[in-house]
Image 1 (cartoon, rainbow over the protein chains, first blue to last red):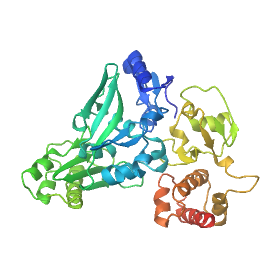
Image 2 (cartoon, each protein chain N blue to C red):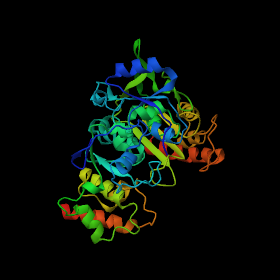
Image 3 (cartoon, rainbow over the protein chains, first blue to last red):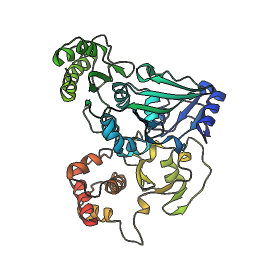
Image 4 (tube, helix red, strand yellow):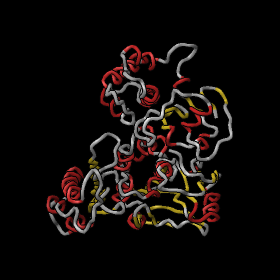
Length: 274
Length: 149
């Protein structure tokens, strides 16, 4: 399968990429590792007329100690997140979840920022980022702003990024002592999660769901139940409350709702919550 | 780009996939196209020694890269230890997935020189053998790891 024709622009800096976005508007797409965008282009589900390659911006590939948080450059590849000693000690769920993405070859190319900016509700990493209450740092023509992870995913494959903005850094709070769990249910190696659950318990408990709606999302009903003193089992029973899970060949909405309850129960238990 | 130690240059259309460039322009047909959706791993090559699925990369993204394909694994007519192990353990049936398996397995051993059987199976999760000959493939990788140690 061959993508539709496009013009190729190689960005030499984040600023150059943002300028190119400003010039080409909605017709342009940023490409980092290309492991979310290129498959869509091959199926012609995405037909950008301009592809701006930011994959060579090595200055945006880093994992740094930021004091109370870990700062991760948007171009950091999954394999680097998975094997980072800093993340393993300070936000272990993120390193673990990065290792759950695709397969080793995919993780050599795919990037954290690319996966998040793609905003796929079936992806693993957005759930971890939501459960960690991370902060997205984005750059645009008028400077830099921060977006809370909980405000970042706005619709199916849509994020709060403006057409001329670029995700440059992800700031992950340090939670070295938090209980955590990632439950990924699928039927074949390297597949997407049919349903997934990320839980981080650090005093209060954050729970995020994979493939349970139009966006990566937090399990608000579970969190509210836990906050109100419910047991983990009672909270898990609320996992699908208020949600409209997608239906596909793998599962209908009823089955996904069932999976969510079971997996949230397991996640809360493993994270020591409730 | 450098391919199997040789500098190769060409003008390519931006939408050309790396696997097609390797096969159709450079004539390196050892790298196979299987699923064409980054699932099966038949197109696995190395970029700077790391496994990459060449059906999910544009040729232009590989500008300046150091690429190794299955044709570049043997040196001076002698099989790479991984290739030799596949031969010794009969780690193939129809052979279609084999180049990708060898490339993925050598990348795996570079990151984890002494993997357990489970680690080999997980490490090769991105490479499918439709003959289901996994048992001997895993044995080949473990043999190569032992031989290299």
